Image: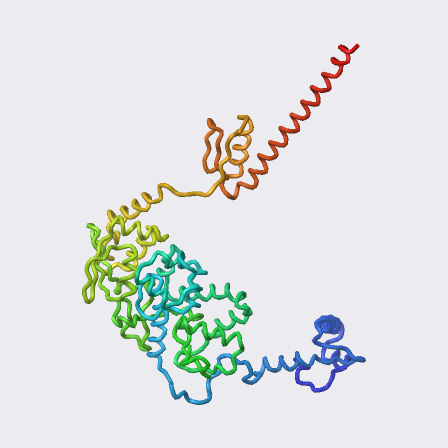
Length: 470
């Protein structure tokens, strides 16, 4: 540090004068050897010189290096199209709920862009049909409205995603984006650094986009689709972080309110910042539950949120819809339909419990046991037969070979099914390679034994033939 602002090389004698004789001098020499090995210092005729680039960048790190390639730089001029926090909250809600609506199969709002569709497919939140990136978003929305079989459906992982709070949902998206960064020729370190820097920005302020690198500019364009940042138009010289961005690293739960229903269950109307309610699956406060489930399997949901109604429609047969309430019934077919999409009984029960009406939460247990048990029984009923890929080994010529193969496969833990009487055993796909090699070794061993026996028989027959000839 003492050499950082010296404009001339430092002699070895002068350096030694800065340290105590003895151990101090030995430590100095050891340190300078390491710095020379790293090319930070160079020794020229008894004078040490710090590398010019390292010197300049070290100074920049301590005092600031100007505005070149600086992220989070506030704009110096006022924005003619300035937006307030309420607008940013509304924008973030529209963008994020458009993704959630798409996942549950509704056409509410603007369909997500191809980048979002690609992310949903690669993350395993949706599956089936054409690859999300191969179809235009408008065309996708049309197919969803028609309930075409070729359209991707929400998966077990996707429904679990809906049950999480928005912070967790956003980070799940960003982590999947990190996995895709290499295929997009982006530096992983720079991408992750960008995410953390977003969390340090202040909500409501505008920041310059002119000093961003190419990678940061690409990231900014993609994050607009998630509602994490707002930019009035492509190529604009400034951008605004939304509440989804500013809470990335704060640990504060995001509160988003449906733009289709400002008074939706979970909305915090008295929030000072116009903060909005949690997503479709976030755990609600006890005051914000809206689902009543009766012992006759009937459901009353006091909400007019299209998103919440769409989530219920995944496992409830909806019958009537009123301005602020929908009614339906939990049936065997509705549960089996949900199970076919990978949604589990535990997930359905968890959703109903976390969104139960305050009147229901006074009961112990919260949900009627008859309904809970029946939902689990319907799941067990569906899972009575479970397909398992495997390899069938049969037609063993010797019982000993079959017994040896079965014993070997059992030790490996790869046996799916066996029938000793018919000498048949089914092996898992993972166990096919080692068991197949073992069976081949048995066959090779038998061939060697037969060959040795034939040679021995031939050897015994030769003297007998010779005696007859004599």
